[in-house]
Length: 230
Image (cartoon, rainbow, N blue to C red; front, side, top):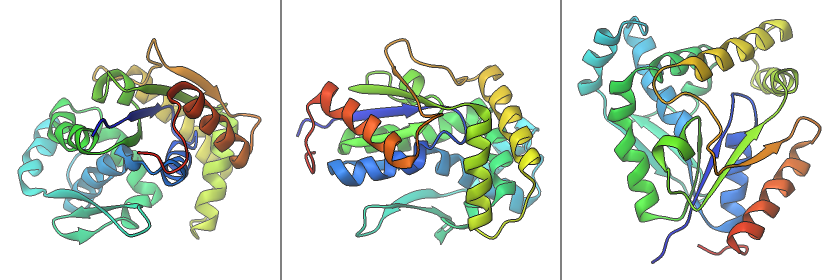
């Protein structure tokens, strides 16, 4: 079967995961949340008290980790760490910073790369992250760079945390968004950037439904993909 691949890159809080998940359901593709994979490594390091800025310490724990993805009947991705379902645990706010740190480490990226590419070889996928179109799937059939102003992204993240029962300060969330942007764009290994052949999608002034319709239209126009077609 000739599988299709769609890469969605962009900064933290742009809505990549939410939109990619819904698009995959709409089109019958497999959704691969690469951020969740890095969050799983970050969670492992956090639990073990690993200094995530120390490359040697992080590299030392990798052989101890068995990270797998699973999909329920609803098609949604679940993450497993050494057999434990950590899908909810990796969404804690403190894990976000851990994920960003381990993503800077080349040995971690190499450790996880084949898992991501294998999914694209075996299924039609929508994959989101920071370097999908530039590094992980450079030959993706469609590349989208999804972004929004930092303030808009921080507002979305703040609301998400409140809905999860995590009380925090908006200004703190905004500072974290800006700092993560800086780290992701300035890192030496696979920095966040728009692929030369990616379509730019700015959702600053769009709500969730408007953003979804924008991306769905792009996919159908560029790939001729219809609902439920894999």
